[in-house]
Length: 197
Image 1 (spheres, one colour):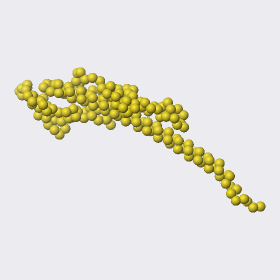
Image 2 (cartoon, helix red, strand yellow; image 1 turned 135 degrees about the horizontal axis):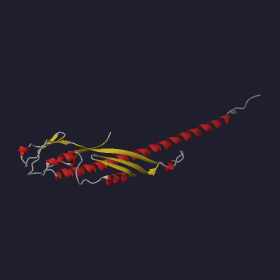
Image 3 (cartoon, rainbow, N blue to C red; image 1 turned 90 degrees about the vertical axis):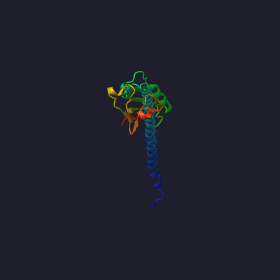
Image 4 (spheres, one colour; image 1 turned 30 degrees about the vertical axis):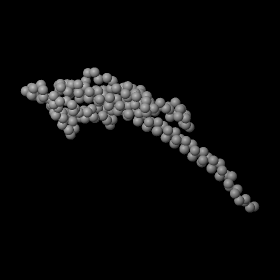
């Protein structure tokens, strides 16, 4: 008996369908993983921005307190250490930046010279072939640090009350004249703000 040409074609079709279905499943699974990773990255961006915003607000407040106490060098070190009376919490600023990045603050922990912020994304991972992802929200946390950049030495008792110490901020020296305080260091000259490692 002679075999008909193409007789095996019908046997390959179910294998073809199975392979295509498997590849489609893998593609959708990779898409779900990609969605989750993108959502997680967005949450981390929001956490970083929120922590940096809170720390920058703290830096600006501390710099303002230093300007207020510029004629009283005995208070400078406390301010550079983050111990300045009247400094308000900056968690509200963290919330603003988190909202601009489609997230909301779940925790805001201030320290003398840092802020740790935890956020949750406003958008879920979304529908996918992985069950339950439509109700999952990415969470992330970040810590931003305010680092003093300046050092000084208090003048001796024989220097008099009208002498201010030289302020050394990284590679610049500030010779402050109590009779002419029109030019003072900016907040970014006094403090650096960065994410903790």
